[in-house]
Length: 547
Ligand code: G1P
Ligand code: ZN
Image (cartoon, rainbow, N blue to C red):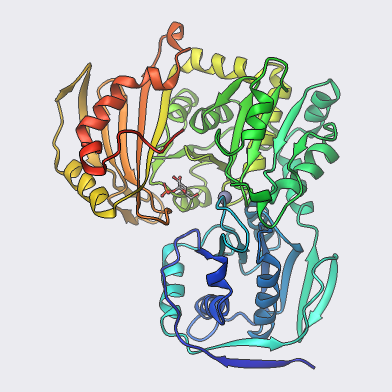
């Protein structure tokens, strides 16, 4: 019989976990008691002393497969057993994409789940690891819960762990750990079943059978098994459709972030005249997506707009959408679709958590962010493969190319030229100074180049469901023709500060839809630089990354 040990510990460095959880270097997580302290803080906050009761509850566990994933799973299993959980459902080999975790938590109505991931950050012994708790609704823990966990990390004095041998998590099946059941399950099956309910798999199967060619870049991260099982297995796409499909603990030394820079294998395959018809990539934990046609890049903002406009082609959305939500810096392209459909459009602060209340209340069905995140009310996380499958559903039903569909969309709704310029690793003081100076400006009615300012503000949001207020969510400068410049500081960066400048211009004229976005936006880019005095503050002449 394995014994419950109570291990004395000391409060740990207590960094406040964001909604994306606690992210640190692997070496930090490998320190004695570090992971244990955080896990005990989660259990204490959601159930143990002072919380509710976790006895007889079920927890979901899994992660993106990065280095330290397996070891962390074993620690968490032994701690869950010692803390009184009845059962932990763990994805086989410790694998569970973030959207699949959300799906499983909701389907089996568990007491939430623990997801091990550092999203798109590199993995390996010298790279990043992360852990977060998702609530029973399937989404990231709201601020009240993360605050409670944080507070607990500052006072923790002991944790409980079972003194037992490792459990086999490499094969499906039920086993016991102390008095707790460990159920190892296929990480793909439930998720694939949900996708099968939402999308017209027969139509997509026929598309592939007809010779349609696709490349899906799993970037050696968690969507490898999902992409292979669903695209090549269930949907009959040719072998080799999924590239970099084997999850590796260091993602093959790559940076598993689906954008034009990091998904270079995919971009190379698609940007040639004889390339495949469709390309897509997902990130480390499977919640982000990038969509490409042959020699054609679809911005995440346009992708959300196109998917929303065509949603009824998929069985899961045949009854229409209740509303569309986008984060404030995302282009207004989805708003135009909402207006045409006669449904509400919501503008929320950056971060997926703000969509949760809207989805729960049935106010919005689809949502998305410019940062390669798209999703719907089927789970409570953004979902990379979901976006890819919805695109396939639309392509199968419309019988047109990606480029034709997007160009047709622009012809109907107008084009929102859009770009994001990131200034990474700038000094925090300079970044704050720049933002404070912008906050003081009063620009209403001012002419800047060819544009007249309609209003400028620091975006504040009142959640229409729970009434919570979020302030200082980014400086907006909105022009009379709907063009916008948005400035905000990243909340996820690790070194110094990152200034993000989002530039958008609306172009209704279809004869002007073929410009390079950087050219189409050049005058607004200049205005943004001058207005915010970016170079004087940061010493940077150019952004580090342009998307
Ligand atoms: C970034 C993205 C944001 C996304 C977040 C988590 O946050 O911009 O849209 O929700 O990552 O994936 P930021 O660094 O801008 O605060
Ligand atoms: Zn991610």
